[in-house]
Length: 503
Picture (tube, rainbow, N blue to C red):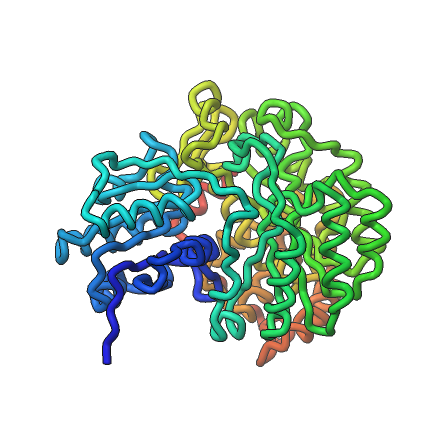
């Protein structure tokens, strides 16, 4: 028998493995309305018409949708269709993409209400008004902040399927003290911790239910070291072979007490997401980013050499005054510290972010379509931006994947950014694109580029590629190991040849 729900909480996640943590907070704090509410999650890969069908099958009167930079286009299609089929349905939007009126996306015009900022109290109050027949006239509603010790925690609303198959997000604090202008956390007034006793009780319940992968979404996990150590101690006392903790940390705050604690964790039980973004002090000053570069380098080196933590580091290309050459210097410095991953982020325009004050002075021109990636700046041409986009794609495939750990060092000696850019340009030309390159084909192309473009010894390249090829467990023998000439690479158009020649 089909059950119905007058109120629906929903969003479109980027992938199935993700969970809508914010919606679970709202659901947990709905009080008497909770029994009338159902949480439905979808992904951006699903057809909007199928999503609409599942939503309307619940015969809702109210639907709340979370809108983010990664799902705004798909949410727009869903809302437009809902309003066509069921115009009486009351649509309430929330989330960072609609929280900065009047800078809001087109989907906001289709909604009945838009809540900016925190939604735990405001969504409940708005729904209660609607249910009572007392609809407010104001469309844009500023969310009310609730003290964290007054919030009901959402962890009971991860179901068994979530625990088996999806990421489990947790948070021990909210807010960020730093004012990096490219980030919406720059708008935070302060950092507020959740009461640790209640937090630990919830974490213990999740552990008992089988959760082994905890992704902390705290913006600055290692801000207050005593709290960081208490949380680490809690999990260390319950450590199992499959327990894995993911934290976002600031790179220049690693006192000895925290170091001593980190050394007690077994290998492959910790992952640190470390936002370096840039090593250029002038850019850091311009975007209000406080970072001690020398401490950052020392701490990354210490973590790599003295712990078994996986280090995922971030750089951003396209910041005001940055250039291709200057970004290359940051990349080379970070690579020398030997992190496990370097995520090459392309600057995006976030609605409400303080960085937008630089758009005109530095001619920051963003894609008008989500995810609003930077296209050109005063100092970076569109052609250079495209090259870095491809660099980032190929770096994920070759560098971050770890599949070419023996062969890539052949060119990542001096000036690694320049050399990998050369490899990236050639790989794009020879492959005819940067997507859908079979792994075996990728090995073959890398061999051609290293031997023909970089003039490296065929025997040396084959020797290193053989180690990587075996580790990748690819079926078949690559062309360069056969006793016949290599097959010709994909032909590319004159425009691509001219572009590469120009670069």
